[in-house]
Length: 120
Image (cartoon, rainbow, N blue to C red; front, side, top):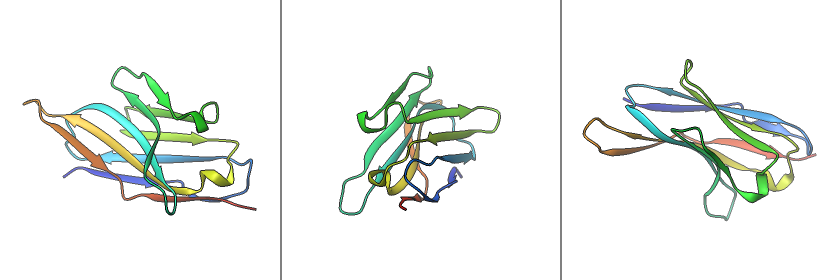
């Protein structure tokens, strides 16, 4: 059974930094896409940053230059480094991994979500 477990969230002051980690366990197959999403109260879930199997990266405009997605293959972990945090970055952050089986089926996995609060 595949599990995605996020860690590293919490309360941070504006201008501070946090690094989220998403540990992937189980037989996940061939990972084709990894991403971090977030959902603030009363808002829709939005993509924050993503990386494909070729390590091409994308990030939403509001976090470009501040957030960086990375992957450690040895640890099977995806990271989101966040710096210069703003109150508007406050949200529940979700890890997402898409994988493709040997038969070509696409599987989409989600973490349970982790709270990030930026406040003085």
